[in-house]
Structures are given as C-alpha cells and as structure tokens.
Image (cartoon, rainbow, N blue to C red; front, side):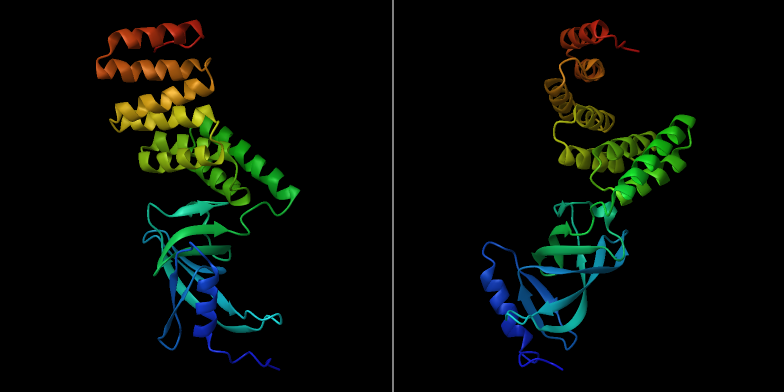
Length: 265
C-alpha cells in the first residue's frame, strides 16, 4: 500500500532538496513524462557505460523527505564526463555496469562522480587483487604487455585504490606508446598517494616524451624532493636539462646519479 505522501509532486521534493544543499551544483533530471527537475545530487546504479563517448547511464529513485521515507518511481538518465570531472574512490576506468555512484553536476554533465561501492568487499578481494598485480608484473617482465594489462585491470577492479597498480599499468601503456593513458594512470596514482616519488618520476618521463621539458623537470624535482636518493630521477632530470641546453645542470645531475649507483646509459 502506498503511503499518504507517495503521490507528492516530485518537483516540490526536488526544490526542497536543491534548497537544502548549499554550494552544490544542480543537475537536471529529465523525467519520463518530459518534465525536468533540478537537484543537488543523484545516487544510483550504473546501467550503461560508453567509454568512447565518455557517457554513463544511472538508474535512480527519488526519495521523499518525510520521516517515513516514501519512494517515487525510478528513472534512468545519461550523464557525460569531461576532463575536469572529479572522481572519488575510483576513476573513469572503474565505471562499470552495476556499480553505485553519487554524482553532482550541471545539466547532463557530471562534475563529480563518487563511487560508493568501489572499495574492497572483503579481505579475499584484497588478496586476489595483489595476486593479479603480481601475475601482471610477471607477464610484463616476460614481454606479455597485453596479458599484464588484463591482470592490472582486474586488480584495479578489485581494489581501485592501489596506487602501485596504476603505476605499473601506466608503465605498460607508456611502453605501448599510449602516452595519454599512461599520464592518466600516473595522475591517478599521485592522487591516491601524493608522496609516491615514482609517480612523479614516471609522469615526468611521459612529459619528456611529449616534449614538455619544463613539465618533466618539475616532476623530477618533486620526485627528488620526496626522495633525495632517487638516482633514476636525477638521471632523468639530467636528460631533460641536456635537451634544454643546460649542460652544466645536466652534468651535475648525471654526477649525482652515478654516485647513487645509476648510470646515464
């Protein structure tokens, strides 16, 4: 049996919701009857993902504001993500059917996507994630880059908060020539662990390959600041300085790398 508020106009509820969320962007929900409502956020299960178009569809259900919490009919809406979309507890790569997300944004563009069930479900999942990661490393060393990628993908599906897996998957992408993909993974690793020196070093390598010498040096600087004995970062920074014409600076970095046991190739 429906409660006394079950037929309450959804528009009224939406206005109340939007008004109670200060400083929150408002997204537009298009109802089945063609009308639209504005709300501060929407939570729901992902029912469709289009990686190529960077869109996903979630099925949501309006919720009453009374103590009895009556629910309204459910609906589906497609949202688009952009380069400026912020992810919490996951990344665009984690967007899969069935996952539960909470989003805020404007119109049909998601400004923030928060994965609400992207964490580990159990200790077994964590152990399995580590095993996939280890197997991926072994495949990578054998030169099976596609096999390594598949294992890293599975590891991140089980544990999307493991910065080390993003580093290793980024390394594979870089080797395969997918510099944008590698950059995205290194960015995610740094987001998860801002003190991870290898993340800055490897991101610097991608910037170096892209010709962004200033950006590369900035990342190498950060890696060295986090780990002053990071010989590889000195060597890489020396290479970038050499390409910029700073030969004295390059020699100083190469000298430091050699003292730390890293050669200049």
